[in-house]
Length: 304
Image 1: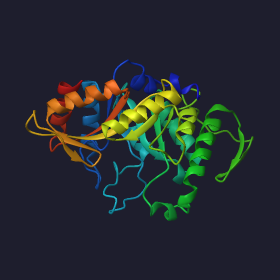
Image 2 (image 1 turned 30 degrees about the vertical axis):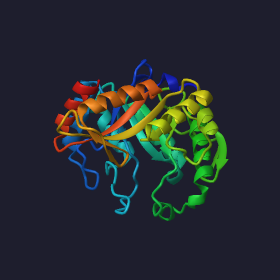
Image 3 (image 1 turned 60 degrees about the vertical axis):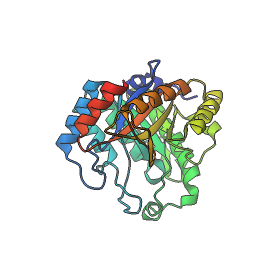
Image 4 (image 1 turned 30 degrees about the horizontal axis):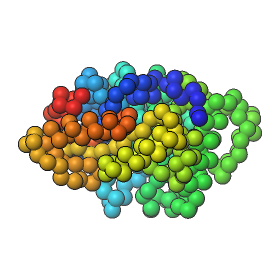
């Protein structure tokens, strides 16, 4: 089991309590095909912290592929989270998720530690293998090697963060003990949370991850996943991401959306209570509403 990451302030913010915690996924304005309004995004981020949301999560989308449908929050993950850190105080800052197969691990180690330092230890890293097919040839990476590259990257990050002048070698290159990657994180390691199956066995994820982040799942499937996770990983946290759209009628039954639901507030209140009972520790919510400020207020007032 990885150690040290549990002292990270962001990880404690998300997972130290007994109940379900809530985070938000950027872009908070919903602008995921064009450049979002930076001032409005930061105003919403500050308001989310005031309302009691525990995390703000930025996706890592190197390129825009129209067939896939969105460009994430558009801005590169690391400078964006550094900017958000300067406009917030205590809320956790997460990546959901860094595509380790398409990034050089030395760059990731340095960039992540920089954000962690600038945010006083608030960074938690969701990490993934990538799922946009055209990006792999764009980066000169064979899709079939994703699983191996992911494992190697996780091991490399842990080593770089924990050792001075490390000696290690991989497909990415070689460190011979005469170079150190600075800065170091605020704790022994930044928490790493694999996303989805990451081309790994559940046993590997349980052993090497500081938690598990999954997508929205039907409730019976979710229950079985959490049961398996607890058997293998003990109390390591389990998180999911979900889209939420509030119907005008608070009593409206749910209508499926891609990775979520449109429903009345009352149904969502019951739904999140069930998630907590299943053992979900944190939910990353993408709220769909023409007036994001109203949606954040409605969620906080009605769900927390």
